[in-house]
Image 1 (cartoon, rainbow, N blue to C red):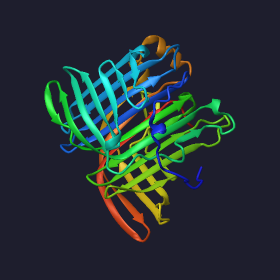
Image 2: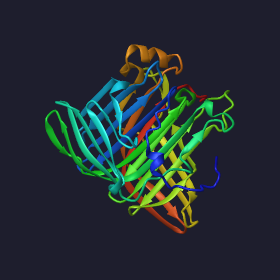
Image 3: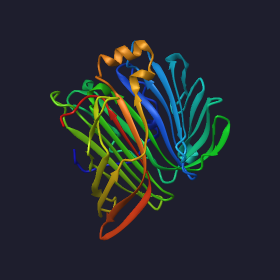
Image 4: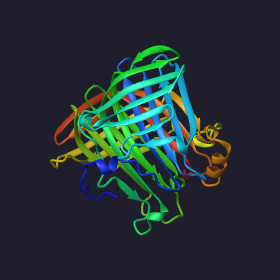
Length: 347
């Protein structure tokens, strides 16, 4: 799993919607930290986890004052209208439009009166992926499933958001993730963390596999470091260790109250990179029973494959210690930390 990274370049072909015919989920997800302290998620997901394709449109606005507004809708797959080049898509009240000249996207969602979003994401540097972006669970058997991921690790965000008719400036920083999960039921737990400030970004994208299935690895972790608006390093020797866990009756999972993060790798120039960050999780912004948000037939189909999928999300003010070569600095910013629990892991 720690093989040298041969490429981080992303072709236009890699950004196209894949639209796997069965047993997969695919999503474009946009995460925004606004300059006025709000946190926003907007996602369009395409799923073939049931008898016919379905679309999930989701958005959440978390105000600095603790206010929250969420919108979730499951839509028939027939309303999913990709462009001819499969780089853009429309679906009833949401559209994601690829902007090649800006290395980004325009995202609109009209769930009025509760939530109206109109934003642009522009990469401050470029898209990133590890190798060709695709990681099979078993190299010898692609039918066992895979994960594919492309990122804009740091984006400049502009636009507007209306929450119950009130205008909010969307200007700020963000990260975009394009992900395909084939046989997502074969992953036990996801950990996603991203720190943003005006000029820097730090990302960890990690998933853990269950025992007993003969997968090629137990854990995969990809990291991306952006300093002064330049992607400095992409790393594979990383970890997010969940600490001080307690049982939550809501989900039946052990939920952390602290996380210890570590990144290790090299810059494109060969300098060593070491990053350390430890965070106490205090501001839980959401915990979501994913099955409860799906229609009955889809819910029953997924329930037969996944024990109980739950998502927990936090936003925290953090500081990380970053060493590149012989130079050490600290970066401070706002962290979004998410755990998705799909199947139990040994404690």
